[in-house]
Image (spheres, rainbow, N blue to C red):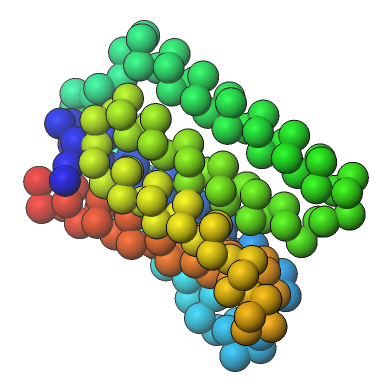
Length: 177
């Protein structure tokens, strides 16, 4: 379940680590009080893994990579569409006074965008993280409503956990490479 190039594994782990910290941080918007220490720990773990990823990226920056002009362009298009979809969806939800759904929309778009990225990079782990993050986004609203939890807390914690696992797998793979 790994990519062909160590540098790509390392960078995936580092990017997932940064996203881990961001999503656990978003969960801190209105979490249940008992969740706060766990969410702060998640933010800290995300940044700790990011530091590991940066060190490994510096060490392996000149190793091979799947990225060339064509894959770089395709990745840019996927990320551009992702950002546009996030922005447009967030604006529509804000106009419709459904701001509490913005993090769920962004989580959904992020999850879905992993599928074409996994195909471009040829890294199966990204499919698994895409499936997990998309599932979090789809489950966040009904589960939060059923359990009377803030949507942003549940969504952010689920996204953070999925990305933490993805980062941990990628960076562990890189360290064992």
